[in-house]
Amino acid sequence: MRVELRVFPVDGRQVIDVATQIVESHRGQGWQALSIVVTYDRREVVPSYAVFEWAPEGRWTDAANGDAASWQGYRLHQAVVRDKLSQPDECQVPSEQAYVLNAEFNQATEDNVDVSEEAVLADIAEQHSISVVRAEELVLAVEDWTMC
Image (tube, rainbow, N blue to C red):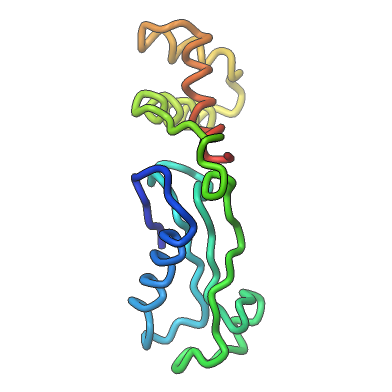
């Protein structure tokens, strides 16, 4: 399940609250474990804020041993937490154009693994009437943000 928080900065408490709400919305449904990915934008391919695991003692590997009916012994574990929660001034939110170009770049390189990244960037730049350097900056802005 993916959740997006389209505000920035977000503090750790807000992210934990979202994870807790998701857990509560799944209570009593027989889940062995939950993996909760909290992102800024649904188009991001890796978690931009955090990943939580709701599992026995917080360990996903112990999910098969858990009591899915009662969730007794389960707890929320922060598996991944990005710096943008603790150091928001270090992270720059990408523009809408950056997301568009990043998606085009990813699609083009997935569709044709033999094409060079330089060729893809040149094509994107031409389509959007911008320089290749600017196209690359915009594509990388999303990756920089996501990994921040």
